[in-house]
Length: 108
Image 1 (cartoon, rainbow, N blue to C red):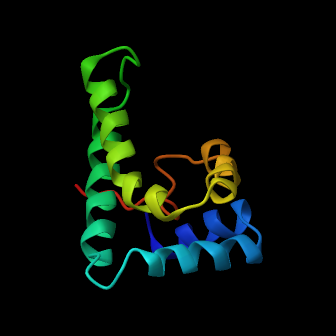
Image 2 (tube, rainbow, N blue to C red):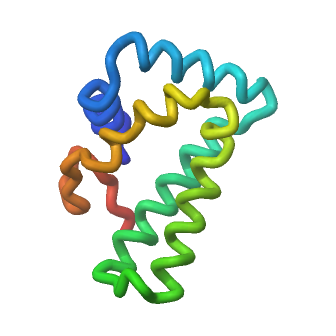
Image 3 (cartoon, helix red, strand yellow):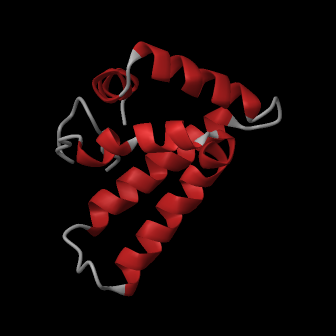
């Protein structure tokens, strides 16, 4: 997802106070956490998911995609408190269009 698009998603889904809490949580990941590598893993994941669509939600491939999502979120969920985790719900309903050039960078 493009940097500007992420900012749009985050400002639509979180209050300034909630974003401050997430920035603090990001710091709790510690200095050895590879933020650039993690961002690259998300970009790769997004490209692979887009390439796989449409997809049978009951397929093994869909289950693997969900498991990978959970794995990519795990480090952040580890440092998030329950309020932060509940506050992220708008992300699940944010109206994303996978071919929106402002939201996703497609690698082809």
